Image (cartoon, rainbow, N blue to C red; front, side, top):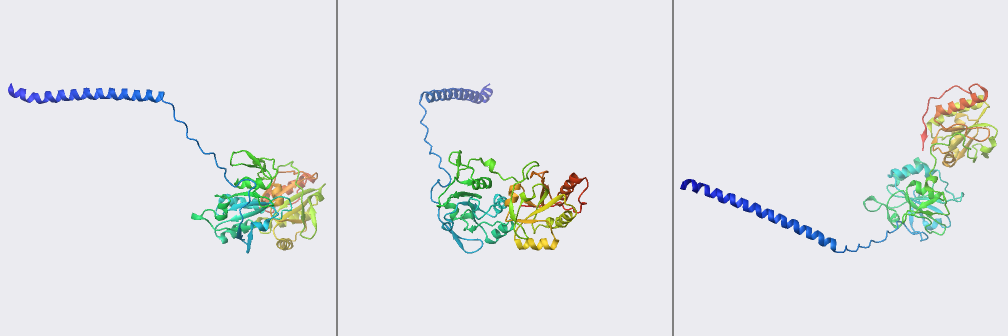
Length: 384
């Protein structure tokens, strides 16, 4: 019995100790819950701390009316130019980077902008960064004719010193600058906003999100977006007067009362040159539809191509894309059929074969027989 009692006694002590510990834990848990409830009640009775005042948002970009920071930079075409060289002219200052996809997408729109200021709108002035040869390639490819200045890139390849002075830390960004060299708009971010500024439309104020009128603009940014899908049938054809390759000027109004196939071309566009003989053949064989070509580029290059292909229909020359922009298509070859009243008679034809089909359908509608057989199977379009 003593042996059995000696063996059981330790287990009795262990069991009692475990039970006692469990009771103490439960007691401590109840005490902790009560303390937490008391803390919550005290917190509800205490007043909330006053909120820390937050600083007012700082407007991005330079303030309206402030002097535009002066600069003097090397021009991409040679020599140097300063902001002072443009005093007396309105400028659309654009910060650009040839490796920025949004910038290169904007390049055809830049090429379409007049650079002489004769239309009363700001002259585009581009400040770019990066390698000079890379920039020359981009601007030559898109035939951008406006002044382009080079700045050294900043730390880690970012915007250069001039961009930092204008608080432009991305591309494309920029401002309008008035004739006196003062900031004339809120900072514009993106191609659409920049092109809208040049058109004198409402630009967004980055400080409060409200519209801020630049140069007396009244339209919204959405209204300023360039049409790039062509004018629809039934739209009045925009008028223009352009120099002829054979001398003098020619106006679209001169063809009022005739059906006109208006073809946009380029001497460096392969599909355009493949289309040229078929257009000439149609011009010689049918008098029902007048072929009128709007080309672009250098006068000498266009005359050489016209002589090479023996073109006898009128060819006029736009400087860049200014007339193409009015017709809503940055590409070649594209064509519109314009009726006797000056209205666009069909949606834009893009590529050689659709253009010939449009010409043939126009002749059929006029006299019931086609003007020519389809001779081109080249639907390629050289887009900008």
